[in-house]
Length: 360
Image: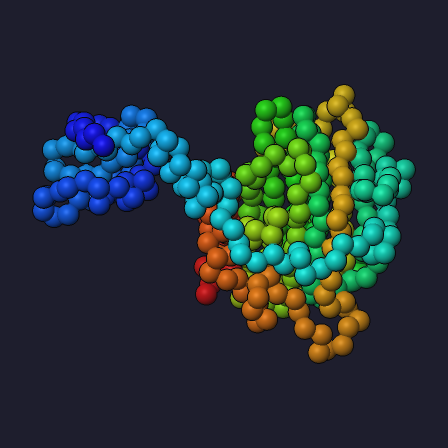
């Protein structure tokens, strides 16, 4: 094994490897060598790892090519999210606790029946100049797990909303509750924005007070189906993508949490006035129809008619709710690297209207 001393400013993003080889290099420095990680410098030479030795230099250890390949593979296995851009494993998969259901066993068309078709694989809904389409669950729920695997259309989809959400708007018009997962359409070459939102007792009616968190996903939602879900309990709302929690909205007061039963909805519609970059880009019907596909429907929990002893479902193994440490770690990763908007951190918002942002 050859040892080479290279001057600063060399650095490397594969600093984890230096831990593996620290014991192979002799050091007499005091204090002990420290590890460095800086992506602002140039990368170190290929197959080199490093640690900080004496203050004036960085010591690099040249690795045999075969050993370097083996260790790179090992690093990918140990730290897949850091190398592949995917979140850490949540360690628990709530979707596995519910069986898929056929569309008509739990849902019905709500509007736009001519823009909806069902085959043995998926429900397809679409938007064109004449109409969009929507569907609704047969039963209302006061708590539960609600999910579907969804695939959205590539290309120009500005102004178009593809949604999966909970609402009681028909039961409480003008004073309703709502919990949203929405794909905000986009323009060529730009990613979809996944918007999550919560409305409470009319905050989505009239002068709207939204509680939006927006994400650019770590995958392309137009390439394949992915599972999107809302878990509603009396204590919290958890938004999940492929069983990875992306947002937790806890109940801090009755005034800031939806407590009335809601139905499950899905829809595709024209929201050109606000959907894409605050309405800058509108729906362009030269690209119609705009198509969304839904499959793998899951809905289970306490219906509005269930007895009082019906136990709310949980997003974690804990019956009392909350997330495990591993789930929180996965959620922090998503929010750190893929969240693009948080209403609580928007300086233009009046946070007196959203006290959950600052209350404990």
